[in-house]
Amino acid sequence: MAKAYDHLFKLLLIGDSGVGKTCLIIRFAEDNFNNTYISTIGIDFKIRTVNIEGKKIKLQVWDTAGQERFKTITTAYYRGAMGIILVYDITDEKSFENIQNWMKSIKENASAGVERLLLGNKCDMEAKRKVQKEQADKLAREHGIRFFETSAKSSMNVDEAFSSLARDILLKSASRRSGNGNKPPSTDLKTCDKKNTKCSLG
Ligand SMILES: Nc1nc2c(ncn2[C@@H]2O[C@H](COP(=O)(O)OP(=O)(O)OP(=O)(O)O)[C@@H](O)[C@H]2O)c(=O)[nH]1
Image (cartoon, rainbow, N blue to C red; front, side):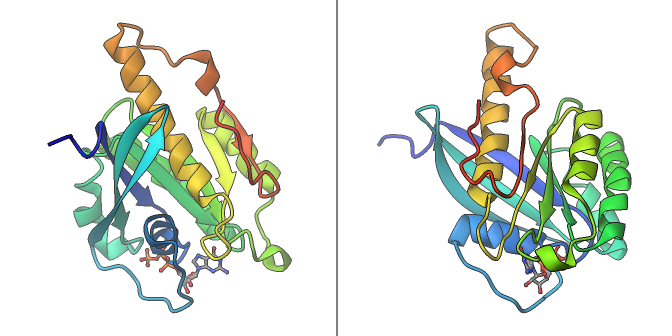
């Protein structure tokens, strides 16, 4: 029987409680959205297979609880992740400030060389915006990672964000196999804003 996929990538979402991690995963895996807030307890995952560069990539997306009291459980999952998505809420300044702490947590707990991606979620709530896109752009550049503004509610940039991370992991593993540890130039830092719904992936 033909294999159902070419690669399996494990991704992890982290960020403060309430920024929309669960909703982003549900939008990506099931194309659904719910306004009711049920805080994640511990950890959970969903699966979706995507097609990238002619390869079937099975994405196992792990959802972590943002609440401090679950930290010991959730950080134990960092090590197995090939990609980590850091999420803040564009209407919540504190969640953006805390991205620095989440970055630190990655450094302390994840494998070296893990791919990272920054997402500013809830970009459908423009009237309540507290974090400017330029601030997040700057932060992403400082850390050499990509950045998207997303909305789990409207779907804006959700598929693009997950695909972009999967593609970076794919290219990285391909270049590692060919003996070139560096990223190909086409994957160099690129940022996408909410207007850029058709964000090209290089
Ligand atoms: N307007 C808007 N609301 C959103 C969006 N994403 C999530 N929400 C709402 O934000 C609240 C929290 O969403 P969750 O996905 O549960 O947040 P979380 O980050 O998983 O929270 P924890 O599990 O506590 O870590 C819910 O009421 C969602 O409906 C979005 O893109 N736009």
